[in-house]
Image 1 (cartoon, rainbow, N blue to C red):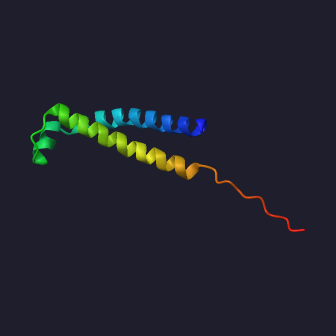
Image 2 (cartoon, one colour):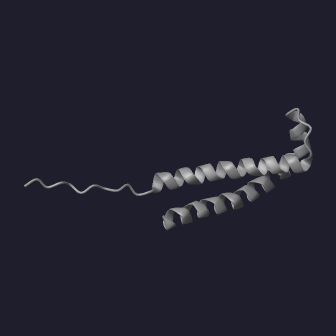
Image 3 (spheres, rainbow, N blue to C red):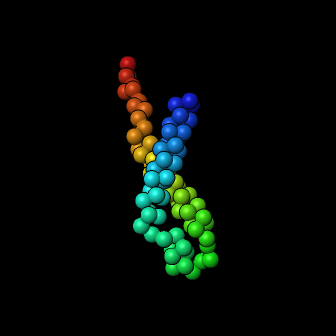
Length: 83
């Protein structure tokens, strides 16, 4: 149980750090106000940054959890010996 909680904490923390980097790269190319206007919304820059950050965080967390799930060792059953 401790190992599982630790793995989830690692995935969450790494997703957080990657979301920071991705948001910095994304919004250095695209203007947040322009994106909001293109979407037909009346958002400010802070709203666009916040929504973008949580979307990036969620995507990276989902990818990390999927990788964690796929790499977990499958318990192998011992072959039964019939006497």
